[in-house]
Image 1: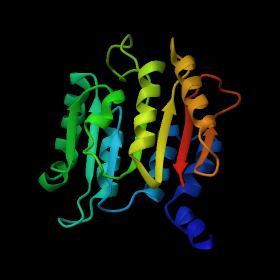
Image 2: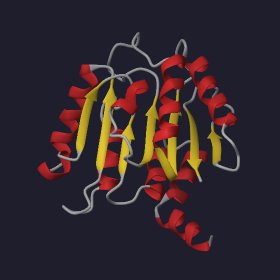
Image 3: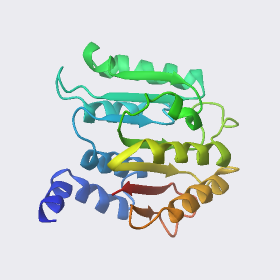
Image 4: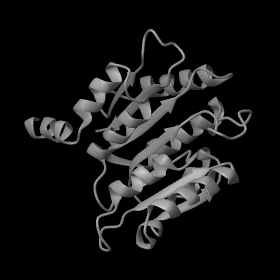
Length: 215
């Protein structure tokens, strides 16, 4: 237990959490630091909703060590524009070897089980829900497909893995979708899963974090 605490502190999560409590940092930054604690070099991870690519980039940096431990990042989005934005960010930020570990797929997050090869253990599945920043706000993730995606993530995840969700309740349909996520997490058996929620009480429209850890 002491070693685990030291790893959390050493990762910088302590400072990020304090900044989050003080309203100085974003929910996505807390998610990124949580991944850092969970992900190991060479792991397979999934960015279920790649958007502008920042989550994909963060995951690449976590799974890549060298040419023998390069890991794999499956990055999904239903919008071609999102994949183009993600590719542009990766081209700008990564070298050739790092980019080769990313597989960009134009598909709904509910179909991730069709993307990840059968039997390949997944360490983290990351969801950043809602609409694409800078894109068409009418194109949003929804309760039905997100529930299907969570079910897929649950089955793909290896023991010691994490489902990470940043949910947005400030746009039409967002609260309904978040409640679907919340209900899904609350139904997971406590002897197999540890689930928590982080939210700002006096900012009812602020993004909400949900973490589901598979024991």
